[in-house]
Length: 357
Figure (cartoon, rainbow, N blue to C red):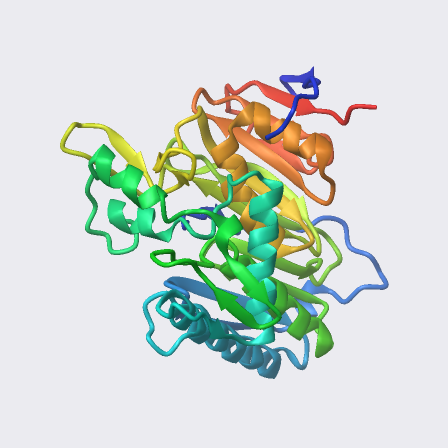
C-alpha cells in the first residue's frame, strides 16, 4: 500500500450511537466455478426501523425472504426487551426497581457480556453511563452542556462493578441505570446472522444502522467490499474487504452539537470524566466475527485513544482495527493490512501496528 510506514508500539500497562460505515457493494472479484453466480442469485431485502435506527437486510437464496422475516421479528423482540424508555421492557424494569428484576436468559447474558467488557477495558466501555448521556441530551436530542458539579454528582451513579447479576436476576444500586446501547446492535447482528445461517442462507449483508454484519461472502464467492466513510467530510476513505465478519465504526463527528461556548461536543462520553472523549481520534473501525465485540470495542477503543487502543490490541486477540486520527493519520493492525485499500487521492500517512513477539 502506497505511503505505509511500519510502526511497532511498545507494550505498556493498559489500564452510542454513531456508526457511519456505509456498505458499498462495488465490483466483484474473481469468480469460483464451484460457487453460484451472482447474476443467478435473486436478492431479497427487508427494511425496518428498530433500536432507534434504520436497518436494511439483504440476503440471497431460495429461502431468503422467510428467513429475513424471522430476522426482523427477532430484532423487534430484542428491542422490546432492551428499550430504556419502554415501561414494558426488561431493562426498564431493572432500572426502576430497587429489588431488581428477573430478565430473560438472553438479556442476562448480554448484560453479563457488557459488564465483562467493561472490566476488560477498565471502564472505557461503561454500560451504566446512561444518566450522564441523558444529562448531555444525547438520549433526547435536547443537547446542553451540564455544569461540572452536575457531572460530578451523576458520576457517583456510574460504575459497572456495582451491578449484580445472579443468573437471570439483575440488581442496580439506587440511582443507577443500565443501557445496552453500546452492545445491542452488535448482538442483534450476530443473532440475525445465526438465524440466516440456520435456515441455509450462505450470503447476506446486514446493515443495522451502520453496524455491518456479513454472512459468508458475496454470491459469486468474492469478499464484500465496504466503503469506510471519511470522518472529515463526504465520501469514502477507503475500501475494506471482508467475508463472514462484523464491522462497526464509531466516531464523534456525526452525532454532536455546538455548545453556547462555540465548542463541538460529541456523543461518545469518556466514563472517567463524564465529558465527550477528546483524545485525538476521529474514528475507530473494528472487524471481528462477533458483532457484540465489534460494537463494544469500537466505543471503548475510541475512548482509550490511539496508544491505549494499540496496547489493548497487543494484549487481546479476536479482532482487528482501523484507527483514524483527527490529523488524518491511519493506523491499521496487521490483520487489517491487505484488506483495507485507502483511496489513492488521500494524503494520509498509513501506519501498521504489528504484534509483538
